[in-house]
Length: 399
Ligand SMILES: *[C@@H]1O[C@H](CO)[C@@H](O)[C@H](O)[C@H]1NC(C)=O
Ligand SMILES: *[C@@H]1O[C@H](CO)[C@@H](O)[C@H](O)[C@H]1NC(C)=O
Ligand SMILES: *[C@@H]1O[C@H](CO)[C@@H](O)[C@H](O)[C@H]1NC(C)=O
Ligand SMILES: *[C@@H]1O[C@H](CO)[C@@H](O)[C@H](O)[C@H]1NC(C)=O
Ligand SMILES: *[C@@H]1O[C@H](CO)[C@@H](O)[C@H](O)[C@H]1NC(C)=O
Ligand SMILES: *[C@@H]1O[C@H](CO)[C@@H](O)[C@H](O)[C@H]1NC(C)=O
Ligand SMILES: *[C@@H]1O[C@H](CO)[C@@H](O)[C@H](O)[C@H]1NC(C)=O
Ligand SMILES: *[C@@H]1O[C@H](CO)[C@@H](O)[C@H](O)[C@H]1NC(C)=O
Ligand SMILES: *[C@@H]1O[C@H](CO)[C@@H](O)[C@H](O)[C@H]1NC(C)=O
Ligand SMILES: *[C@@H]1O[C@H](CO)[C@@H](O)[C@H](O)[C@H]1NC(C)=O
Ligand SMILES: *[C@@H]1O[C@H](CO)[C@@H](O)[C@H](O)[C@H]1NC(C)=O
Image (cartoon, rainbow, N blue to C red):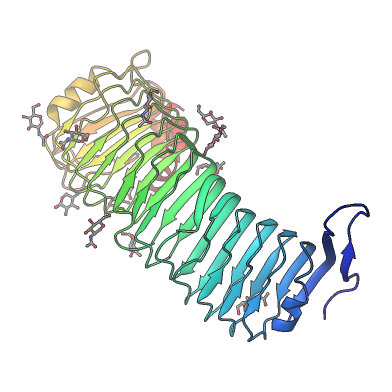
């Protein structure tokens, strides 16, 4: 089933000192080691190279330096080894999916790949990428046994999605920026994610991490969220702005959030169900929240000493006694005041609720609404909706 216009090898432009070979095919399907070695003279291969599902041989794509196209191995359940001793560039996708026993991936010179999409590689524990992939637009690695990302030494990436790799307990990436999104979820139980040089990122979502280190992160253009992590602290010494929303939800070991330079949150600001977080005082510079503020949990101290503008609704509920904080914030609420949306603040709650919930009156509570807001907020919103998007909450809070 290999394809029509397969030419091998074609000499490049006459007059060049070293003969450069290039080959092309819409899709070249490789069935065995012989098919792979037949491509050795192709320094550049234009088209897709696909490994046939029934392949059992080790596949060595030696000789090829550049694939102007994709390299694909899907459901090749008997493949154990794949390599390319000279391969430097894959201009499209490096797609590995459902390779049940693939244990060795050896591409020592691979540095540039447009898209890495590796999923369901239950026997893959490591990579032999000596140089390391330095640029990629999109990297997705899911359901592998990789215990390190050594070999993926990205300097630049747009989208980075790493999930369900249960042996992955550490990653350190040299990236300076992430232009679309970073998502880490359900990897090793003790994942330490370290980004020593990261200066800005669009969206970032962290789940099930035990350490997140972002010493130089200065701005998040979109949203940043921490959900169900085992972090004990989150320190962002250089972060000044988050363009979208900022969320800390169900991080049950978190005791310290410190973002000393954060001045602006463009969307909502949510701190919910972080059971051990007793004090919310790590935001000394925070001036503006473009959306809603929604804090609920077990805290007793809350201070936002620099706050001057909260455009959305305000919900603060805690099991702790937050009478002082409620009195303080109450004095800042009202249509032309700091807190412009619906105001709810209540301590000593048995079940402190999220935005849109009504505190029980037995607690120390103080609640008021700006003239037009109450009906709109209560009619339209549910805590789930508010929890998910602070921006929506903000809009509803102002209706
Ligand atoms: C691989 O297998 C999965 C599940 O059996 C199937 O959904 C998918 O279409 C297969 N892909 C290819 C390229 O055969
Ligand atoms: C992104 O980071 C890389 C280094 O990792 C840097 O060379 C590049 O200038 C940065 N781009 C922007 C737009 O900040
Ligand atoms: C960033 O996240 C927000 C909220 O989840 C989403 O609406 C937006 O499309 C994301 N943007 C990018 C570039 O991923
Ligand atoms: C990730 O966290 C969620 C929520 O706590 C939990 O249900 C899930 O088991 C965790 N996954 C891993 C792989 O730790
Ligand atoms: C978790 O990782 C840290 C280093 O990142 C290490 O010091 C610690 O011992 C690890 N804990 C467990 C339980 O493996
Ligand atoms: C923090 O920001 C300052 C000023 O923008 C910069 O000089 C410093 O190098 C940054 N620190 C880190 C660790 O990136
Ligand atoms: C994100 O913000 C940084 C710093 O303000 C900026 O340099 C970068 O261009 C922005 N990136 C995007 C994709 O908007
Ligand atoms: C939280 O972390 C910051 C930064 O490391 C530190 O200065 C502060 O003392 C910590 N706060 C608590 C309560 O541990
Ligand atoms: C916080 O926990 C309560 C009770 O378990 C739950 O109803 C609520 O949805 C949680 N809030 C968020 C934002 O996850
Ligand atoms: C408050 O702490 C208790 C005991 O640690 C825990 O069971 C409860 O879920 C916490 N409530 C919230 C809202 O974090
Ligand atoms: C709360 O603040 C008070 C007074 O500022 C202080 O005495 C107390 O230790 C703080 N409690 C916590 C849990 O940080």
